[in-house]
Length: 198
Ligand SMILES: Nc1nc2c(ncn2[C@@H]2O[C@H](COP(=O)(O)OP(=O)(O)O)[C@@H](O)[C@H]2O)c(=O)[nH]1
Ligand SMILES: [Mg+2]
Image 1: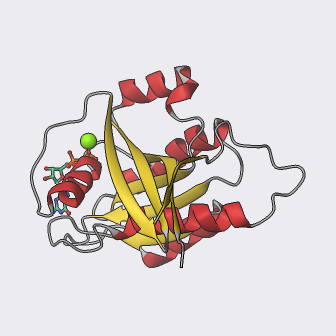
Image 2: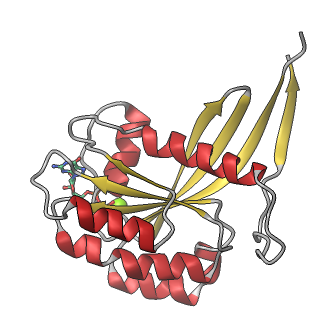
């Protein structure tokens, strides 16, 4: 039987306050073990591949430095956040401030992307004592049309790959559902960049 494997490319934003553990999560994903890393200055990119059934998806993950002066830069240069297919909205489960700051990050994402953009809330550092209650997290998810919630600990290697696999599943699922007429099209549509006949 002839099978076709298609490589799809998605722009995924990894955003949230500085110090919540975004870059560490990416490095743990890449190397397979927990490593410490330096502060992200401006913006970093990581490529990661996820296979769903016969489809290989290439994630171009934009890892945002979370310092306030960088945030101003993102607001002033919409191309940083626009045209995204998915968002991993990250906070540190042991820091209530980083949870409160999610609203600002969400505003930035929503302003420059289509209303049906796929968003996963990611609670990082679950090895530490929790400062955010389950109810507050559920309320945030419901009020902000978040597609899923995943807790991870890079330190304990818990759910390191899951947010990246799940965002692909959600993006693909949304693409299958016909768009409502009034939903604005994404700046960049998903395009098959390669077809391989096996
Ligand atoms: N306890 C704990 N600390 C973590 C974890 N992930 C990252 N860190 C620490 O949190 C700090 C900030 O991490 P970093 O990845 O630079 O955060 P970013 O600014 O969001 O990219 C570093 O000292 C990391 O070692 C985790 O899963 N558990
Ligand atoms: Mg970083």
